[in-house]
Every structure is written in structure tokens, then in C-alpha cells.
Image 1 (cartoon, rainbow, N blue to C red):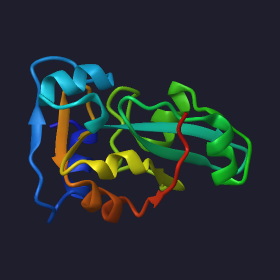
Image 2 (image 1 turned 120 degrees about the vertical axis):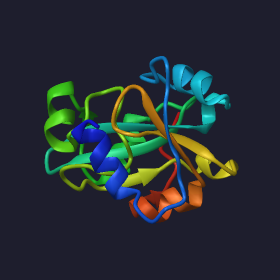
Image 3 (image 1 turned 90 degrees about the horizontal axis):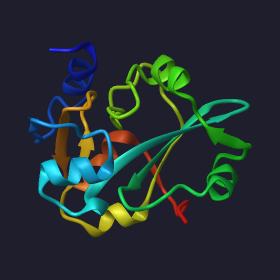
Length: 152
């Protein structure tokens, strides 16, 4: 088991979830939705933005895009999309497998209210071929995220 998958598994300990290993990539929301057999908006995208003071994590529905202006306003700092090297260094995950849990370093965290419209959502489990299904209310509690509108 990869180090990334192990961290996610540990972070999910005690939570009723099953991690699914997929036969094909789940790097993008449409790919993950196809593997999970769900709507694209049921996919949790973990999008990281770099600020002057911190890296900020935004959990958004698969069909939504983070609005940098709204995200910056929530974070109280100017934000730009984090590059792949920064994402890996701070979270321990490669882009395409960034989980909402199990990061190496904690980051301020916001969650798209659209995700709350579903009974279940699917998120990356640390690799491009592992995802897990969870109730959005459980994910909100697990991550300590703040529900806030930040999408276009």
C-alpha cells in the first residue's frame, strides 16, 4: 500500500467508508464519476490555492469551479492556484489524487455547499486509482471545513 493511501486510510479510521481501487484513472472529476457510477457533482475535488500566509484547500463539487476572487475573500489573502510541487510538498499527494483528509500539513479548509445536496459523495483516497464514498455531513465533520460559497 502506498504511503499516501496509508495516510488516508489512517485518517478515515473509525469512519464507515470503503476505499475503492479503480481499474482506470480517477484523476479528473469525469473520470472519477465514471468509475464511481455517480454524477460529476458527487465528486469532491480538492483544489489548493497558495496565499501569502498559507496554502488553502477548497473542496468543491466536480462540476463547479473555484472563483479565485471569492476564495481570496474567504481566506483573507490573495490566492493563486498552487503548483504541483507545492501541492505535493504540503499535502503529500500528487495532483489527481489529493484527498480531503490525511494531509502532511493542515490547511485552512472550505467546502462547497453543493456537496451537501447528495446523500453520498466520492473523494480521492490519495492516489489516482483510489476513491472513497462518504456522506457529505461526515466529510464536513472529518475535515473541519467551513461551508461557504466560493464557486462560479
